[in-house]
Length: 419
Length: 75
Image (cartoon, rainbow over all chains, first blue to last red; front, side):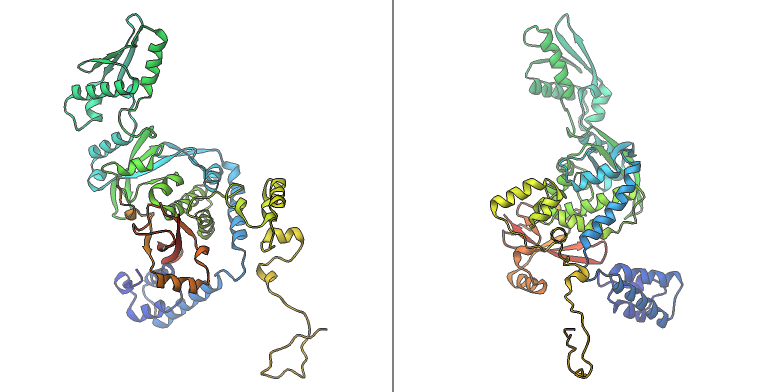
């Protein structure tokens, strides 16, 4: 992408302008925005282009992080302040495609705490080409993802007098959910087998009517069987309770496509299903993303999820760099670590910094037992002992004094005097 | 098995040879163990990677064109 031909993309940009802009110490994104600006103004002279590029570069260099800038502290405040605004309208559930998703502060806390499972796990499943445009094929994928239980397939009746459970399967539903079969009897026999395996009993089948009962007449056992029957998954992924299908615009191709939103998440299983686009499908469970796609993908997912959470709340003016820093730290050791006592804050080198965070006595006691030392490098420990902090100007050693004017000639370095 | 490297969330991972590793450590003036880590069982790792190797990762950055980072393979 570095060898990018801007003259082809923009009508009013010629080679001379490209040379000027490309020579600046700027990111690709900023260079492209300069070209876009020139384009919007329907062409500028070479001098003007040079001035624009110069001004952008000056501003860019000006806004870079200074040496000894406490970026972590700045990030913490930059995320924390909008967080206080979030508390006001939090604990609301807003739906993406009629699916409830935890949003706002609870979601943000869940992300930085690196909870094993989110409160509302969810997947966004994209489909491969032919499936994405065809409603029937898309539905086939839906049946492979959504868990199908017995209540969706037919009616159950419990006959207490004869000690049998009768299932009257719905022919149409069977053929709809098992589109590869054309005989509902075959499907029904498969279902009967699944029931036999799961409950460990014998079944009798006649057409789409399945009947079974306890080994010996027992009213309790009969009801227990019915309970267990309701939980059997006949098709799809157990964790996914519901799938919503939606038609959306694909930003890359600018075409309409079907996208599936799932309630519940099993990222690994979903990726393996035929018709699922394994290059775009995502889950909101960062641990599943980590397991299936690795630590770098988890880092991306953390940034995306935190940014989206802020954006939903109208707080998208938080600079993405703060969230990138958080994600970098959380994924630094190759696994997802939480921010907090059990994660980042608890694994700091400094005893005093850990003790200042949470469970003070335990940390001090452990440190005393193990004879730990504290190098007093960080911010917190220096605040505690009352020393200047080694950030910003605090790290620069200066001695006050006046220069001896007579000794100072052009070549000699100024020597501070002692008065 | 799903090809992990095709996923849009997964950046390009390549194994560095010893010479390139030296250059990187010199450039940043760090020890190998100061680098961020990546687990050996990470699905995005190149197949021939072993503990102690350094992996070069080229991210599609949000703030610049490409961002290059390095991770040390552990256990």
